[in-house]
Image (cartoon, rainbow, N blue to C red; front, side, top):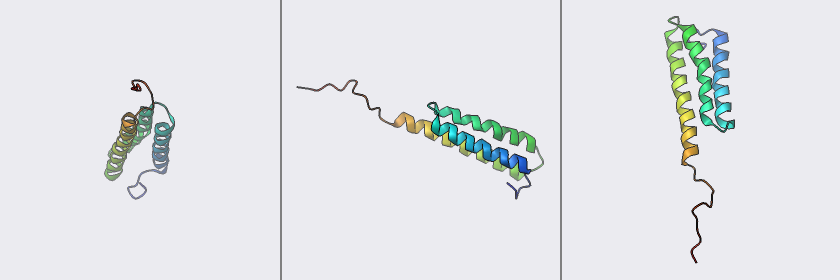
Length: 92
């Protein structure tokens, strides 16, 4: 982001947003909480405005990748088999 003339404080906000999203996605029972990290990236998007087109494209790309990662984590939880004995009846 430094190459694309993004201000230093916005770079740290982006790093914090992605890290917060990763932490929320991995440690919360409800995986969709990781999408909360997108709020920081949306702030960066609006602060950049039209001043840095490559920085804006990079922010959008990061947001899309972050959404994809959260949805993959949600799908991974859905596709795991449950370890329950419900419905497993022993046949004699």
